[in-house]
Image (cartoon, rainbow, N blue to C red; front, top):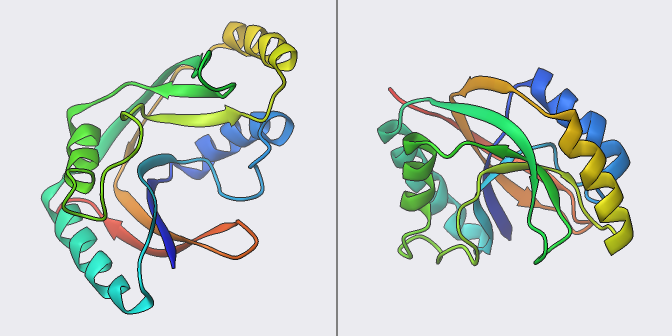
Amino acid sequence: MKLGIVIFPSKGFQDKVNSYRKRYDSHYALIPPHITLKDAFEVAEDDVKNVTAKLTEVAAEVEPVEIEVTKVSSFAPTKNIIFFKVVSSEGLTKIYEVLNDGSFYGKNAHPFVPHFTIGQGFSSQEFEDVYGQLKMAGIDHKETVDKISLCYQLDNGTWNVLETFKLGN
């Protein structure tokens, strides 16, 4: 079973992100806007209870986290992916590090860059055009998130929430 761990923002902010994703993100239909805390990892069906136990423990130790989205950025030249950049915070980093210290289904392949993807799957020319437009649009959003979600992937590539864990006591 393929699992991943994410933070979903409020419905209002998801709608704003999706207004861009509908046009620019080839993965729009697969999962709602999110911050990836742990890349996809494989577990046996009977190991899921161990994963949920760990997430219950982690969630209890971490207070709700404020996220601040300040600008449009990209992973160019490595990848033609455009995103809303989330300012890294102590709370976000703490959750990420606990889930990716190597003791819990390995480490993420990439450094932690909290973000909401708004566009991917571009040719080089499309990327330059769209990135130039979106950088000018700008973004300024703050909210507090109080849940992390364990998601599982279906055979068709879509992701669904298996369980949600409330942060703090």
